Image (cartoon, rainbow, N blue to C red; front, side, top):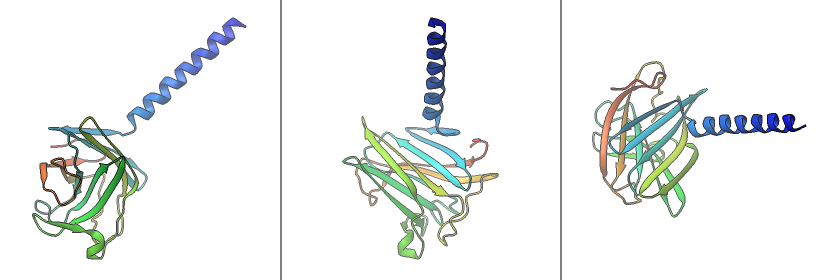
Length: 178
């Protein structure tokens, strides 16, 4: 009887450890640059994204600009008083972006969640790889994708300028970047 209890307890502990490890990982790839982290996982026709930065302001990611921010699909998000707000924007020029919905596109963000703790803002969300939206170019997984990562200086407003911005070339399938 004691052997069965010990064996059963061992299985429960092992399964708990496996589950907690799998849950904690959650994403297949991770890139950290300066004080910002981008994690992601491709799930069917969607891209699950987690952004984290050392800021009390917004965090953002942009996909496939042709020049700086021009023509990029840009997702911005912040956490204020425990509530997450996100916006789906399109790069209308090298230095300006506007809501997709104002330009005839749609907000294609689902599964939004986030937290702001100890001066770090973390948000998670899902976007389709190909939304069919006129303001979103398809995100190709098997080839290099130009990605913009940015965060604001500490103000919960999408109108505030970025305190940090970088552009990377990322293969979303392998996680390789430059």
